[in-house]
Image (cartoon, rainbow, N blue to C red):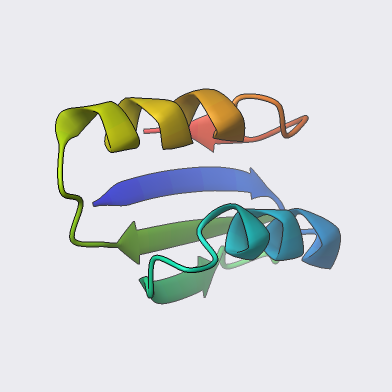
Length: 68
């Protein structure tokens, strides 16, 4: 399971979806009460730990994204 928070921006959500494309993630989002931030939870079935580390490192490149 991956969890991310970022300033509400559809481009960042699109980048996250593209990052996990092909892994068939279950994706859920929640916008903060005031609409400033969006939290995203992605659940995938990873064959090994290396894939999880790789995805977190790729996600680091998205500016303003906070991984939990």
